[in-house]
Length: 454
Ligand SMILES: *Cc1c(COP(=O)(O)O)cnc(C)c1O
Image 1 (cartoon, rainbow, N blue to C red):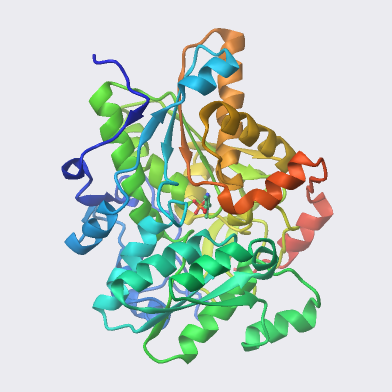
Image 2 (cartoon, protein in one colour):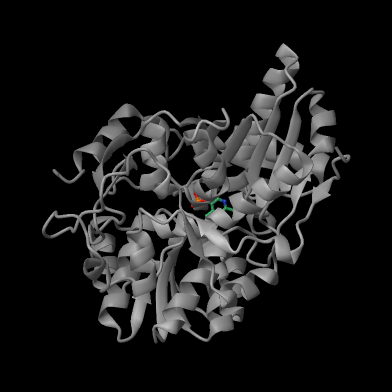
């Protein structure tokens, strides 16, 4: 076996030609998405007022394990993919662990995260179906930036509703989106009915992804030739993100790397779902015994403290209902620095896998996450996004366990993005002013009480 380099890059030809659809392999499908009016399982037509057709079809495709990536999307991917699989030799040394640590680094493009993988696909299909503009929400701003990049490439207009706290904490994200030609509105805003309603009920709120989604959907419905796109949670987004897992698996196979543990941070579940997809298929087929770990913030603990129930994807209860682990769509998590993980629910695919025991989950307070991020930056050089640092924290904990037991495990995690736009958060950590907020059981009960009765 050849020696393992610091960075493993596939060649362009080795990039996947199809996405991987884990639903086709799962022993049991997750419960169907329900129409919010009739409470019947959604069919393609139900999704068309919001989503374009190809994406609605992908959303409801439980049967094809592989779905071809159109050539135009592959061309876009070639601008920044394949992404490297990095052996964290320096971190291993720093920790004094016998474990081998690898990370798949998705932060090499300008948007700074994995979100571009789905943005490219969603904008391509929209353009192909004659859509002239799109709306979306963004939390920390990575999704909005990714979408702005894809929209300008394919020639589609874009309005981004950006969670207000993030818009204030990260004005540079807004400038980046505007540079790519997008219109950015801080949410909740007074430009939509949903925004005005949320503002009336919660004056002074810093907003949430749920609020921003409501505003974006309303605008899409009221604007001609306009559709809404979402950067996480939905099955078709996980499908697009499987490019991460397929590349990772190809690189692992090339060098005989056999992960024992695969870790990802989990906001809506798209990077984790994409990273684990082909590995999970092998696990379900009895070909490996990998432990999969979702790392989430203690301030928005959908998996670790949420409930498995039908819920809306947005605060204003306009989306179809999805059965998922959720802290309740009416729950507004306290502001924290990992904006990309502040979503009340979790991908229905990951929720089902978690419910069936294929995945475990851990939650972390942000000061512990930033300690891990700092250790990582100082040893590996790369400044991680706070979201990604949740996975780093979990990986370090696993590697430290190996130091204690002497086990030479192979630990692989997804490093979803860079932290260049998160320096306010790093500054707060460095200055010792960062606080940790963990909801009480009563706080969560309020969120659960607001769940729709289905
Ligand atoms: C959005 C984001 C996440 C969380 O989203 P998932 O859908 O759970 O992957 C994680 N890391 C970064 C850098 C992000 O931008």
